[in-house]
Amino acid sequence: MRQSSTVRVLSLAVLGVVTVVAASGCHRGTRGDYALAPEMRPLEVPPDLTVPNASGATGVPALASTSSKPAPASQATVAASQSGFTVSGSRDEVFNKVGEALGTIEGVNIASRAQLLGSYDIGYEGSNFLVRVVASEAGAYISAVDPRGMPATDAAATKLIAALKAKLAG
Image (cartoon, rainbow, N blue to C red; front, top):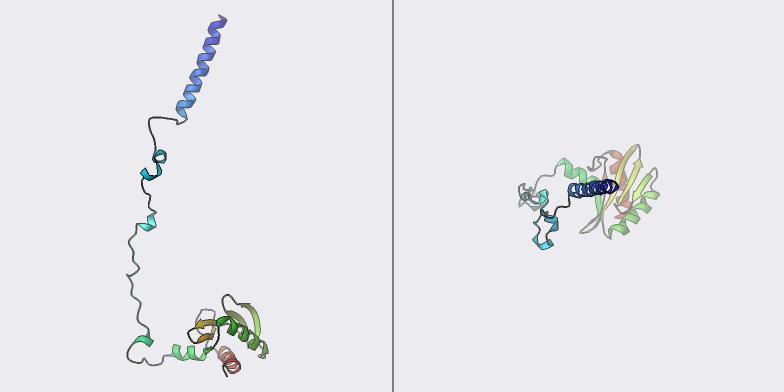
């Protein structure tokens, strides 16, 4: 009697182990792509690489400076010329000269400066704008930019740019 109860307990234990192994997903008959050799696996392409290239779908209009006939001076062109000028030298050299010149102009408050971006955040005569220094073919272009990213055309910005031009380019 004792031997039959031991056999019964052992058979239940073996049955339990077989059930656990069968339910755990260890099947020898079915193999996924992961089990294949790397060169045999199917190629997976990300969805954004299967979209056709549409970079040439929109055309960029030609600049007025590249057209054959001269364009009349617009208000934006006049404003841009009043809010900037070019100085010879590298961008970093000119950036430092602009900082020194701004320090000598009465009423200029430099809120912050970012040499990496080439900009000074300026408060002058109740107006706030950026003075930017950008590398150009002829040296460095110094300009005043309003918070919208457009050339600053208010009286304070044009006055400050004129003062900087007198100190640096003159």
